[in-house]
Image (cartoon, rainbow, N blue to C red):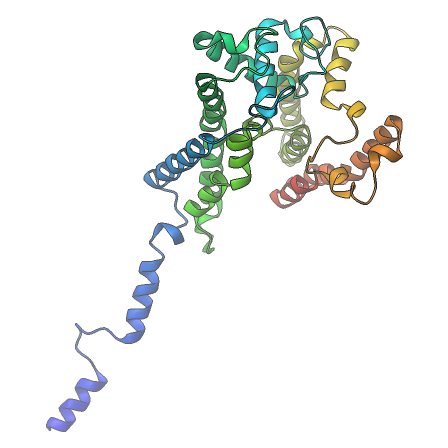
Length: 343
């Protein structure tokens, strides 16, 4: 009887004991509850990641910047400062035009008008506390500890106000749509990878350029986004009305941003010439694009004239047109993601 009872106990362990298989399953379940493996972005998690990302940017900004103490043209830090100087002291009509107050050969403005408006907003803030750093002409190459702090703050505040909310919202929407699909991705890690991208941090807060917020909606990206939105509208029931509403928003936004330059064709051309400065070549310095990557094999600037380079750019853009048409035809996310990489 004792042996029989022992066998019963071995075959049927007490209810309080846990088998090896159950322990492994419980450990696996618990490990998935930690933030590293969680597909839920909680407020406290996103707050910690955002604060840490801001701290990293502050620490990087304590170091030197591009062109520091190297006259006569200094570096991209001076370019950003000079754009604030020009937008503050000259009318919008002269921002992209060579005048007695705006010498385009010295860090002439070559970003879209929306970027110029952002430079003007930053100029108002800096001019209120350090006006000598933005004085017309005499402030070229101006360097001081106070101006450095203020200039660094313009980039950090732009990230906090523009880039950080966009990244958090993207992860939130992505989690809402795909978080419950059982995938092994992690929402906190996804947000951390976006906000702690070393390339963006070093370029914007070390080298000093501010391209993350300034170029978040570049021309090629807008073409892709508008194509995707057009495809979404055309899949709706009342697609004519939806397309009309999209057109009104796009055209209205364009008119609002380009209003100072729409009074004449010449004024519009001045802006376009600055945005596509072929006179400096098909690319400048080490810009990461097709032309720069192929320049070690083909010396584009030396072998071809400006008219040839313009033709090459037109052909290249036409070659990429299917990437813009595909999102409009499908109206789905996968073609949209593919076309973003083709830009």
